[in-house]
Image 1 (tube, rainbow, N blue to C red):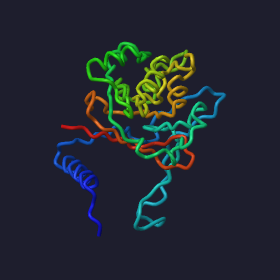
Image 2: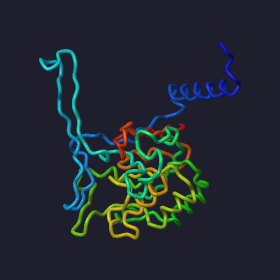
Image 3: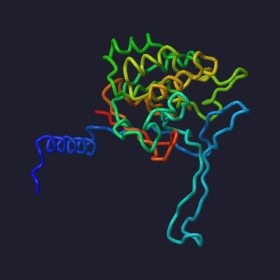
Image 4: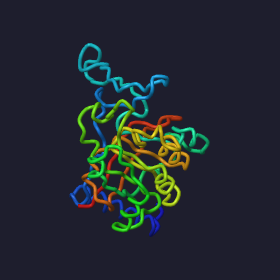
Length: 269
């Protein structure tokens, strides 16, 4: 048996320390995932476009004549239901990148440090609040520059709204929910080279983003820059501005444009 290299031994020690810290409570694991159930709200498109299926669960057997010793279900939903991952191939601007779908994105790109920008007060006052480059740069003056390969998570406390009606917040002129200013997205994607963004709303773009230039700038520019999106997150109020590590691997759906997922954050105590 060969002797592990010093680098391998050091890496193994680091992993052992990490696991020990989790087990002993020095690192807290925070679940950023909303429960997935039939009541989970889904994005509502104009009637001319084909809609996504809502989540449904069909019981196969439950310790009965259909299967005496086992319980299991079939489930159905769209890829972008509940807390979900947006891959670059999800948008036309990201369709030509290699390794742009859920089955072939390099797995190390699902893990990165979290930069949590808290705008909950602003979104309480204005549901159409847009995160601007100026707001991000003000956050950087207080917490340091956003590093490359980071997840930028926007805390709005939108996940604390109860029910699909409040989450979607649809008025006569369409949905009203916070998101990104069109000029902020290229700044994050290109000048900060982040992994992607995460939001508490059901999609990464603002409710009124169909009227922006470009339309749906977070999808258009973020995926056009080979970056990712996380939507319908929760518990962002339990994360510090910096210092947490986010793990967000989607299901390995061949040629998937995204998938529901379980997003975890490792937070030092």
